[in-house]
Image (cartoon, rainbow over the protein chains, first blue to last red):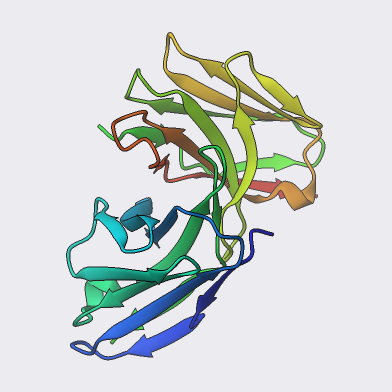
Length: 111
Length: 112
């Protein structure tokens, strides 16, 4: 158990509304990641963080922003949700090596 | 070409069978390799890291072939509880080497 929680676990929202997903970790890991998982695409990196206030884009960052004001929290924001952002979102932390450990996920539906 | 490719399956095998999955990767400089397991509607969980000499963990054996750029996972004596999707994961060793590249997964169904 890597001590990662995500909230909310499920959310239904309407197109055009802002949505923020939260990832919380308790073990002081420096690296944190946000992925989305869709059928046929596998896990794709949205944004990642390598420290407080240090973030960078992944391969599918358009339409998403992130913030990390504390080591333990990494927030993912959809500024104006679209139906194409309906997905399962996973947060992960990187341990001492290159292994990553995942939170339980958030299922987001944009109607 | 995808950076990490896997046969999506499903592989449908009886209990007790031996099953093998292969995965190919495109970046020859890759150094770190992993297999993750993902149950339906759950998060991926690390199954094993793949070392250059190959490694074994109980019924699971992972092999790395750098010359052909593929990784394999062998499961012996399959159990019903092995039914899941198996993700092949590669660290491409680029400048941003803290990123992992995930395959789309191979689905395994073990039947009684």
